[in-house]
Length: 153
Image (cartoon, rainbow, N blue to C red):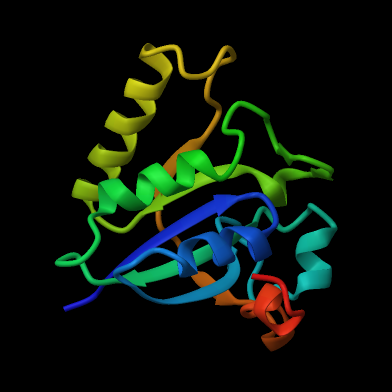
């Protein structure tokens, strides 16, 4: 039986592409989560006023890839020490966030964050939010698997 994980790590195109390469990931969907605004569009989220982050919802087979392995990918693909920013993308919609779907995911995310902070992997404090999953809004179809559609892998 598949399980769900949701991560925000900047622009969702690259985040989705990274998770699609992980063996055991069954599917990915890009979208918006974390804010109170109902039914957001890409244009809404780009304003930075919806409270939503660009996220990737990952459906995975826990017999083939663990949640801890997904967390490892998450930490490696972005800079979790920059508040509301990844590279040239600035705004709360690009924040570093783990949306936990259960208490086990929350505990694993908190433990991995604490371990990275403690072992000095990053010079600056990790600002990643770890928060319960909220309503997920699927992004427009043209955003799904965007890099593959554009010939980038």
